[in-house]
Structures are given as C-alpha cells and as structure tokens.
Image 1: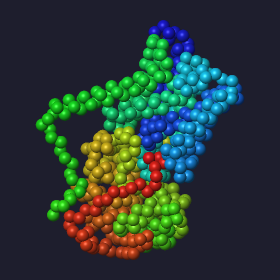
Image 2: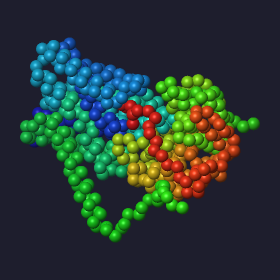
Image 3: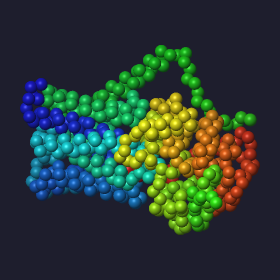
Length: 290
Length: 253
C-alpha cells in the first residue's frame, strides 16, 4: 500500500479511476448501436496522431486528440452521406491508422518503448499536466453522457424515431463521434490504444447480464469500470504487472464471474419453483385453425 | 372547411433510380382516420416515410400542418409508430424508458423530465394497457406488447397526428383490441391518424377513409373496400417478414 504514497502512483490511480468511469458512460451508447469495436478503430487512428506528434516534437496526446477527432468526424460524414458500409469503414480506420502511426513513429527518432507506452498504456509516467487534461476531459465526458442520456438513448435505440421527434440527430451523432475520439485519446496513456475498447465495452457487457433498464445498466457499468480501474492499478502496483492489462483482465474476470453466477442463479431459481409452469404469451398468429 | 394536416402533391420517390412512387397526390384533413392499403412492395410504407421526411422526394411537394416539410419544425405535433422495435445492440431498456423517449419532441434535448412528462408517460402506458409492465425490459415482451410500447411512446408526446406503419401486422388479438381502443380514444380527443395496414381487423370501425396504393400510384381513395379472396376469410392473418430499407450505418443501428 505504501506505493501509493508516491505522487506518480497517486496520479496513476486517479487517472485510471476517471477513465474507468468515463469509458463505460460512453461505451453503453456504442454497444447499443452495435459499434463495440469503433473505439478500437479510432484508437488506431489516434496512433497516427501519436506518430505525428513524436515526429513534429509536439505533445503526442494533443496531436492524437486532433487526428482522432478529425478521423471520427470524417467517418461519421462518410457514413451519413455515402454508401460505405460500417465494416469497410472500420477496416479503413484500423489499417490506415496503424500503418500511418508505425510509419510516422519510424520516421521520428522515438524508440519502440515510446510506441509501446501508447499501444499498451503507461500509467506510471503520467505527469501532473496530463492528469489535469484527463480529469477535465473525463469529467466533461461523464457529465455530457449523463445529462444527454434521454436524447442519446433515443438516437441509439431508434435513430429514425429520433429524427421524426425533431432531435438534432446529426449533431448528436457527431457528438458521440467526437466523444469517442476524446475518450480514446485520454485513455491511451492509461490502458493503451489496443485495450481502450475493452474498458468501453466489457463493463457494459457485464452489467447488462443482470440489469433491466438502460439507466441501471449505465450506472452499473460505470461502477464496474471504476472498480476494475481501481483494483487493476492496485494489483499492478502490488504484483508489478502491466497496469493497462491488469485493469482489462479484471474487467473481463468480473464479466465471467457475473456470467457464471447469473447462470447458476437462474438454474437454482428454476429448480426451486418447478410447479410454476410458465404462462404462455397469447399466440400472435393462429395458423391453420378454423 | 376542413384543415389539411398532410398534403402530398405530385410526390415521386425512387431508390437508386428505380421509381417506387409516381405522381402521388392526396390530402389528410384534421379528424380523419385514413388507412393506406396495398400489397407488399406497393410503396405504401415508402409513402409514409416520405411524409415524415425519412425518404427524400425526387419531385413534388409535401406540407405538414400548412408548412412545407423542409421547413417543418413542430415535430411534437406528430407521433410516429414504426413497424417494429429495433433490436439494437442488446442493452436492456425498460418499457417506461422507451415510452419516455416520446416526450423528447416536446421537451427538447437539454431539459430534464418534469412532472408533466412523467404524467404523460403514465397516461400513455395506461392507454395501451401496459402500466403493469412499465419496469420490465422491452425485450421480454411479446411482439404485440412491444408494438403497444411503440404506440405508447407516440401517444406520450401528446401529438395531433399519429402516423403508424403496419401497427397490427403479426400482433396477437388482445393487443389488436388494446390498440383499437387506444386509437378510438385518440380520435375521440380530436386526433388525426394515417396508418399503413394490410387488413384492418378490429380497426375497421374507426377508419373514415382508405387510400389504396398499387404499383407506386393511388388506385382508390374513398370508402373502405371490402376484403376480397382469401383476405376475406375471418381467420386470415397476413404476416410476413420485413427487411431493413437501408443498410445499417456505422453510427446508427
């Protein structure tokens, strides 16, 4: 525990907790729109920004925010106007982004250790200025995702209905695209671009196994993300493991625990009440009767 | 003098250069309950999607409440009931959460729900007979109950015009009756209705006019025609799958 006396460990813990809250708050909308992997795609684009930042000797995180935002907006515009299908657009993002990143990092005089810090995260090298960026942007993401929940729920659930309701669907879609880019880039230092999607998606997948509503799923997913981030950093500090990977593995472990426990609970409940035969719904269609 | 609510003049719609609707003109006036009838692929669903601005017109014009569709902004006056609830990515949502989306047109994006919003959602849930299922996940409801959820969502916005796309296709008899009752109450309160249907069933007494769409044009506009052939048999139920009109996009369901 005394490791957390060091300021760099405190910064690591705070950054991880902020990201643990923010990533699932956005991720629930991505999961609802079947975009669970978009964070990964935008992470790859962000890597091009990291490469450009290293090459130009500018803050890689800042350049990555800009490049990832531009990439996310471009994809949203292509999607809403053009005919490029979702998976092709994702493929372009994945391979274009990672190839651009590797190429630019290679051109700069950065080492592969630099690249690894962004690919897999490097929580213990977060500076006070980074922490302020993560804190401010992370808080903004959480506030926006909660305050706009009714509207974002509506467009994620049924975009056409949202349009007929007069909601600013295009603006809200762009907001989600930009928020995804910002979340990916602030989380890049913590868990790395290759693992950030896990923190957006896995807590939501865990929560929705036991919840009944959208709001309760969001609350539970944020709590799970917070817990995974906090305990992941603690495990990493105690057992000297990679922090990003520890956080993600803990999130996946809680998914498995909930999945197994849920299955056992449902089986026990079924055995406990054998007399209660399920009441069938009324037939929707009666075929062949007269 | 009746007030026109929907006016379509010489409307033409096509997908990829293939015409779906040709030179369609019709009007729905306040207080009318108009059924759009026609075979699969006749273009009746496309027609209501064009009326709602979801499909662009290639030619012609549409006005809603005396305002050109392009400049129409009073969406709280319209309640839309799509054919079915999209499955989405599987994040659960309660019946109440889905119905509460119907208040957004009135409330806007930024204002949090107030007492009037909650009261309207309660009233809409009661109107379709789902008050006792409010906290259940919609995915656990039957097809008919999901359809009633969508109708409650439209009613929650307290619209003047209801636009429904096949509200009774593949819906159980209890839900059809609940739906017909909700529609009667809505019309009794002065509402206007445009609905797409294969056959009318328990809705028939409520319908004041029918428009039959055939091969992209209107071939009948007037009294409700009698069902013919096997459609006339009392137990005939017309059920068929509906495919999506457009490929799923990256940021949409």
